[in-house]
Length: 365
Image (tube, rainbow, N blue to C red; front, top):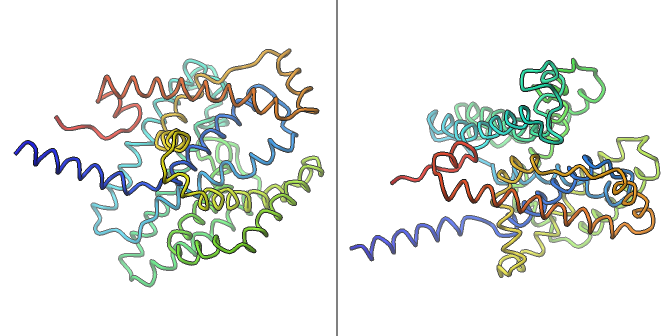
């Protein structure tokens, strides 16, 4: 009887593992690496006008939101309970842990997060959630999407089909509106995070649409001409933006709109490599399965490099960008390793603390 139960458990765990898509996990891990990489660059005041830095920045966050929409797609809600449970799960597993780490970072002065004098400093209303803006912004997106789907399901199935399209068009309008209309600071950059919300909502909705119309989306990705046009357009817009010396942000927006598709297409076409689960693939997938843990903890370990080191790296980057990338990549790996070590220690030693701090499901004894 014990053997049968263990077989059932093993089969259940195996079926849960099969639900994960290897190249998606690897893509999330790669993007998380670039997030930490970018934060180290920003905190260390390394030259942001480098072409390679701008190239990375063009797809990093759009790709994260696109994948979040892709994996967060829902056709409809079975009941009101299902709707509220879905939102509650986002609060417990993401928003609440984010608030805990934001509070700790604010009180103990973690780099790149919040530069006030404690949590209740007046600058909370002008700097908002600081570096932790991603989690509440993504939560707002899910609430809007889930609420729209729930209301649409009460009307008709036809309405549900058009909701993602309507939300995507509305997101484009909101992005343009926020860019050209001056908002109060506590709305645009403060607690509401409208600036970051409006700039990234279209990518989240594109992920929803890509999942809803997956046949068409992957058919496009399998077209060589389509991929060639994406790569050429991405490089052209990035180069135009780079040589405009940051004077035309619209060029960078076009680079953002195309860059994340280029990277997603690349990982999609390399999916066989990630399905083989080699060492590199397993490491990237492991990062992808622990992106929230890394994101929450990494601000406490971001180094502030000495001015002499920064000047040397900036000077070197003019002639040898590879050396700069190598140095920052090593620091990034060290920071990520510390984050995963802390996350693992907490999860292995305390189920309750793991649930509170990282939103993991509580195990029943």
